[in-house]
Image 1 (tube, helix red, strand yellow):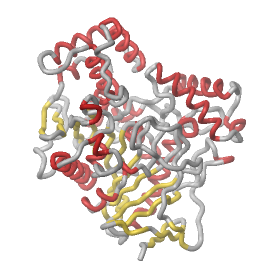
Image 2: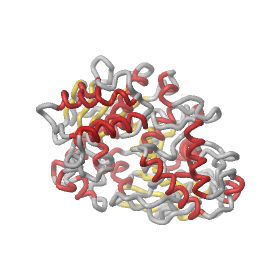
Image 3: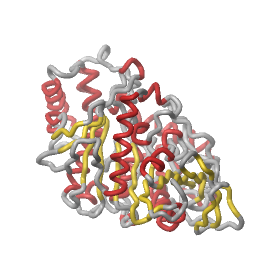
Image 4: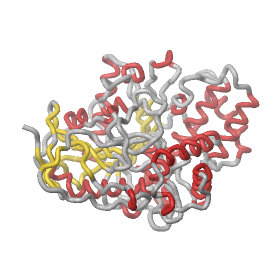
Length: 499
């Protein structure tokens, strides 16, 4: 017999899957279509009878991802749905793991096979929630007549839904941890600085994404102007665009993405806004906005190799081109370009004798740190001043894909911490065998321990100390897991005073 639960909106029916139950495609807000396009989420309508929740909803409208194994299925502007995985819907007051997918704020879905919450629910006796939220121009475009930060407000609406309803699935709303990777990690870090999100979670796990990627009002306005020009309606506002088909919006969005990508910039991202995000998230965290929230933050050693598809530019990249590319990256991060030479020299010196120092490898290392590792460190430094439960990790397991040239790239940790090494294409991307399974078990148990207690340590890991600037204790996940004080520290120190 399929499980049935009663939530605020009505009765829903899920399905039994192995040793867990799952409920898919539950509406947490009203469809953001028609007059609701570019407006804050509204409560979902109630229904009578029993609603079957055994299939995923449509994912948010998006352009296709170039990455294998990341299919999102059908798409629909009516996308504000979530999925719940639980050992049993028995009001058991279990900790809740709330997942926000990544994808550059323009792609992804809570229904991707990589994020199947069943393995975590079964292994850790927790309730797992995965969500969809509005993406791209529909979720993060700042237009006259539109509500800013809609994707973030969707996430807050889903968190409020969880607070009101997760007990019916055996979860404890007072033991909820938010987590996400890439743009999902950036979204998690942004929530740490949003007043409306306070009190909705007690732990946060931003993976390969931290608190730096937000627009100023000026940069958001430039993106909006480019988008409207691409639509051929440079003076339009939200009201004038509500009748346009989604396909036309996505076409204009694609042109904006291409232009911003060439500059090394995110096109769509949260924006500093007086009502929803008064100051940049990192500043808010430094000021104590996330006091009382445990933090587990980290990155992968070779993040950007995924975006280069494992093709190091050493063969074709000379010293002059390296300097130019580093300067461009610094400008994208609002750092004075004159520091490029200092950074390159520091990385050459730090890597001498232990790592490749060809121009392409140096560029990969500098860009990985600039975009992911240093922002993670800055977030940890900010939070540890207000909550001692701040922990850092570094993932260094290498991908076997493309003859090993991807290294420990972006997103590689996901199938390990979700326990989804068996998902389509993951054997080629992440690897397989006893060592991979052992690493997956250790990571799952760390994320589960953090969700349960606010501390990620467990018996199969070294004693995991909290992060402090004078020590910088970091758990390195690889074939051998070890606690290292300040890994790659000379390279980290080269960024002091820059980011």
